[in-house]
Image 1 (cartoon, helix red, strand yellow):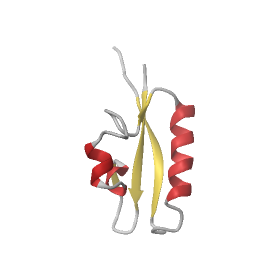
Image 2 (spheres, rainbow, N blue to C red):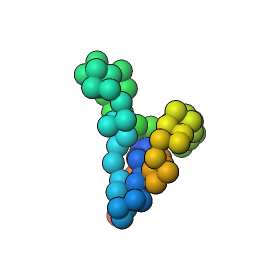
Image 3 (cartoon, rainbow, N blue to C red):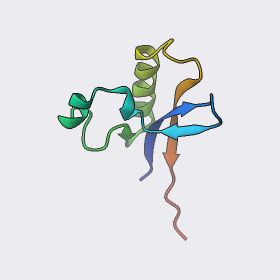
Length: 77
């Protein structure tokens, strides 16, 4: 089964991809309010909903930053 990840993309200084956990307060991360695997989803629909929510929450924060969905593909030989 494929997994979908939401990553924060910053194009200001080249291309930088990272999990958007740095956007959240340390207390949120310590309490694991984002779950055990933050920004990791089993379905594309789930990932799209969260990506849209993140774009709304952080709208106007930094123009060179946005959120993207990356699909992990498990290849079998």
